[in-house]
Amino acid sequence: MPALPLTNFSRLAIHTMTNKPWTLAQCIQAYTHANVPAITVWRNVIDPIGAPAAGKMLADSGLTVVSLARGGFFPALEASKRQEALDDNRRAIDQAAAIGAPLLVLVCGAVPGLPLPTARSQIRDAIGQLLPYAQSHNVKLAIEPLHPMYAADRSAINTLAQARAICEYHRSPFLGIALDVYHTWWDPDLEKEIQLAAQQKTLLAFHICDWRPNTRDLLNDRGLMGEGCIPLKHIRHCVESTGFTGYHEVEIFSTERWASDQTQYLEQIKQAYLTYS
Ligand code: ZN
Image 1: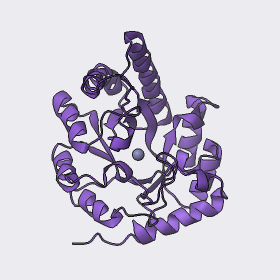
Image 2: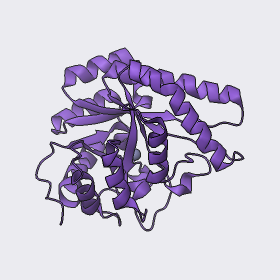
Image 3: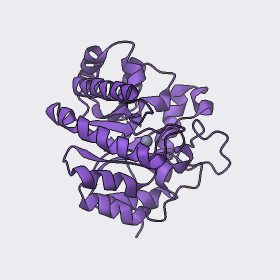
């Protein structure tokens, strides 16, 4: 059964990093003007103005804040660095609470030279240490599995099953999974894992973009929806058939797009969203 076509923007959210050249104020102004109802805020746009000011701007805007991106980067060779990471994640939780974001997205981290199984245990333990703090601030944590091409230095959590295992271990209502199609579309267990996550009540976020088969850069050449080979409608159908009613968050890192006119690009995003997502 295909997904129902998208006919409006009521579930559309955009990550500020998608429009990287813009400040938070510019993103807020452009999204509200374009009738985009929701936003995921990256920390780099908060840093110049501080979380209280960012929180006030967002509250005044009427935009729904879906999440704060991002925390994580937990594993390290030295204990002191792991402690620094925990401290930074507590600051991220503070920021999330200050801007009204109910969710902090975690890019869990990996370090060359640290065996992946060790990195995974460090990630699991760090999340356990953070959870009480997250709960006390009413901010959920979402583990975002990253494509295995990032296993060397960005995330030792590369599949939905690995993320689910950590959720299973902690069993906290404040811990779940952010599903990003860029990282997971290839997974032979994708459909099954979406269902399992939903059963576990841990499917917390849904990020969309596309995978260009002729990708020129593994980080900053994500495609606009429809430009690549990800079966977006199928994946959305899988996600929504579990009862997921959250936002479809457009998260595109693209050097090419960042160099273009961002206002025109926003219109292209909206069109691509309705046509291909
Ligand atoms: Zn993502």
